[in-house]
Amino acid sequence: MAVVETRGLKKTFGDVKAVDGVDLTIDEGELLVILGPSGCGKTTLMRMIAGLERPTEGEVSIGGRDVTELPPRARQVAMVFQSYALYPHMTVFNNIAFPLRAQGGMPKLAIKEKVGWAASILGIEQLLERKPRQLSGGERQRVALGRALVREPQVLLLDEPLSNLDAKLRASARDELQRFQRQLGITTIFVTHDQIEAMGMGDRIAIMNKGKVRQIGTPHEIYHESGDTFVATFLGSPGMNLLEEHDYLLGFRPENFLPLEVGTTQDDLRKFSLHVTRVEHLGADRLIYGELADRAQDTEIVAKLPSAITTPVEVGARYDFGVQKQHLRFFDKTTGLRTNH
Image (cartoon, rainbow, N blue to C red; front, side, top):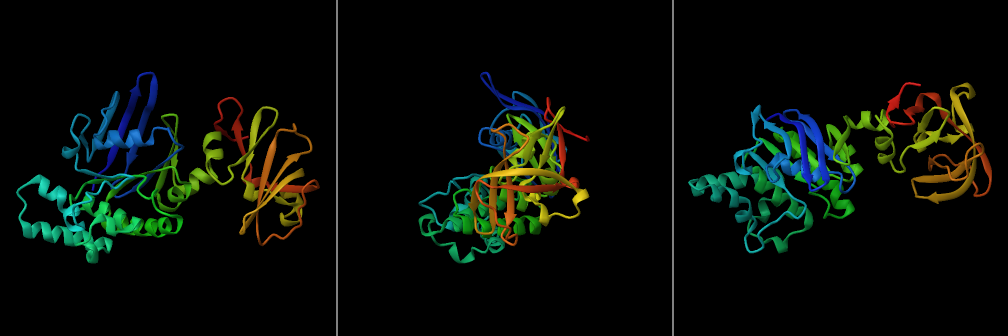
């Protein structure tokens, strides 16, 4: 296991800054999730750590050793891609054993023991004689992880490894992946655009946009104490409501925007009059869209009410809503950065 550091890491493709000065430290044994929209630079950052892309500027170190100029095989990292890239003509055993044989010189018995060790951790011992076409998506994912594990890497790099699975299988795969990462204590970097994966798996999350890391912190920190308006509106479904005040932006999350009778004491609330324009019923929640009485017509705001709140809300009507003051957040109108107003 090893600490991974990037210092001033940049990658440009022509005039495009794919990664623009990223400084990160991933602690030994940590699972860091890199989260961001498509095209934000997260996969390029991962590929530079792996040695698959050469930085335009900056350095990468693993375990205190500068590896910026080293090829992937000399970095003691293993990477699992979105496609898994299994060899279709090989059995599961041979797919997992492939990197060991490629190194050369390892006895057959040692290879068999190493493959058996990885298969037991991942619960795929019974699949070793099958071909990839005979496996489910989740099983293929575990085979790809097994192939990475047998190399005993210092760092495991996972690039959207669950994106090909259906929703139910993704949930179980997240649990399995997190369990095995904790069991081995291997330093892991996980790239995804899926917020649920990020929030549920990461010890910390690095939010990227336009080649830069906008914020890094625990899931609780980045959601409840978002550092700027991008992070605040990117996270959450829906994202944070933002309202223009005189010299700042006022923010609050939809789940904290509630009908007045649901709130606590009246003195503890910032109150709004909401004209409801649309209601979405999502089973466990209702999304209430509307406009505020004292705002421009194009300023849409949304409340997220759990099914336990049965207050009637009708389209076209006006209701009093409120936010507890402890849930209000303030941002600089020019820079978008969080402020203490």
